[in-house]
Length: 96
Image 1 (tube, one colour):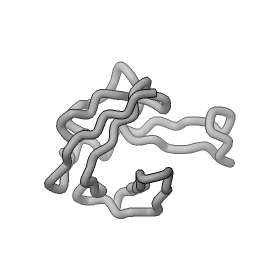
Image 2 (cartoon, rainbow, N blue to C red):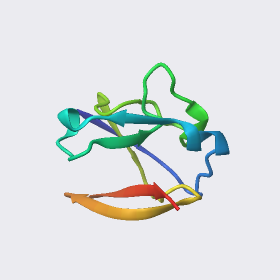
Image 3 (tube, rainbow, N blue to C red):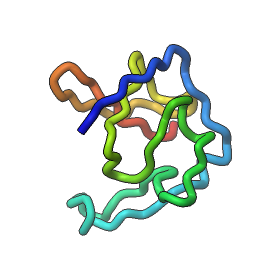
Image 4 (tube, one colour):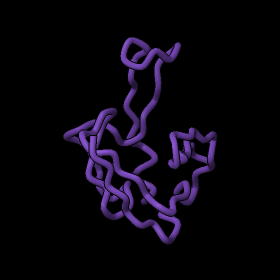
């Protein structure tokens, strides 16, 4: 899988309409008891304004991994946790 690094030099502020775009993904698909609510992830109903410039994927398994560097959770979100994979830190962002 290829990795594309995109600069994110300012904090991204998504429009308020992004707060209503949620998809339920059952535990069968992700091994999380009770499943997950994923924001703006349903392909075909993707609102591109909800993502920073350069984002080009939807759903759970894009063919290209996109990395924003430096990166930060969008305005109105907080960092709920981090994961580390080699030299990459991934923030898990949740609405504040």
